[in-house]
Image 1 (cartoon, rainbow, N blue to C red):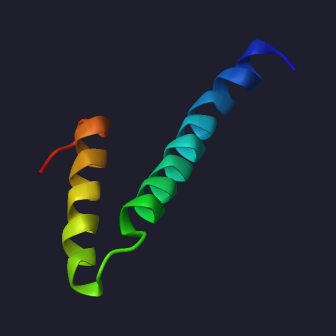
Image 2: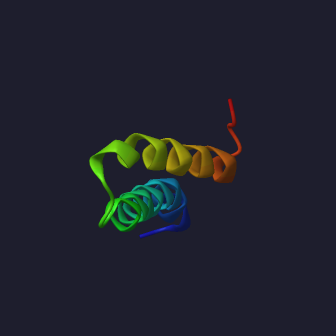
Length: 57
Protein backbone atom coordinates (compact mmCIF):
# COMPACT_ATOMS: atom_id res chain seq x y z
CA UNK A 1 0.00 0.00 0.00
CA UNK A 2 1.55 3.30 -1.01
CA UNK A 3 1.47 6.60 0.89
CA UNK A 4 -1.48 8.05 -1.05
CA UNK A 5 -3.72 5.21 0.09
CA UNK A 6 -2.71 5.80 3.71
CA UNK A 7 -3.30 9.53 3.29
CA UNK A 8 -6.87 8.80 2.21
CA UNK A 9 -7.46 6.56 5.22
CA UNK A 10 -6.28 9.00 7.88
CA UNK A 11 -9.40 11.24 7.76
CA UNK A 12 -11.66 8.20 7.78
CA UNK A 13 -9.93 6.78 10.84
CA UNK A 14 -10.07 10.17 12.55
CA UNK A 15 -13.84 10.36 12.01
CA UNK A 16 -14.31 6.82 13.34
CA UNK A 17 -12.23 7.54 16.44
CA UNK A 18 -14.17 10.76 17.06
CA UNK A 19 -17.50 8.97 16.67
CA UNK A 20 -16.46 6.19 19.03
CA UNK A 21 -15.24 8.71 21.61
CA UNK A 22 -18.51 10.61 21.34
CA UNK A 23 -20.55 7.48 21.94
CA UNK A 24 -18.44 6.57 24.96
CA UNK A 25 -18.77 10.08 26.39
CA UNK A 26 -22.55 9.94 26.04
CA UNK A 27 -22.77 6.48 27.62
CA UNK A 28 -20.66 7.56 30.59
CA UNK A 29 -22.51 10.87 30.96
CA UNK A 30 -25.96 9.26 30.89
CA UNK A 31 -25.13 6.42 33.23
CA UNK A 32 -27.23 6.68 36.39
CA UNK A 33 -29.01 9.91 35.49
CA UNK A 34 -32.68 10.68 35.79
CA UNK A 35 -34.64 10.96 32.57
CA UNK A 36 -35.42 14.63 33.24
CA UNK A 37 -31.68 15.46 33.22
CA UNK A 38 -30.77 13.63 30.01
CA UNK A 39 -31.59 16.48 27.61
CA UNK A 40 -29.40 18.88 29.57
CA UNK A 41 -26.52 16.40 29.63
CA UNK A 42 -26.79 15.67 25.90
CA UNK A 43 -26.82 19.40 25.14
CA UNK A 44 -23.68 19.91 27.25
CA UNK A 45 -21.91 17.00 25.54
CA UNK A 46 -22.85 18.42 22.13
CA UNK A 47 -21.40 21.81 23.11
CA UNK A 48 -18.14 20.19 24.20
CA UNK A 49 -17.86 18.24 20.96
CA UNK A 50 -18.57 21.37 18.90
CA UNK A 51 -15.92 23.25 20.87
CA UNK A 52 -13.36 20.52 20.26
CA UNK A 53 -14.19 20.43 16.55
CA UNK A 54 -14.12 24.22 16.39
CA UNK A 55 -17.65 24.75 15.12
CA UNK A 56 -19.46 26.48 17.94
CA UNK A 57 -22.86 27.94 17.14
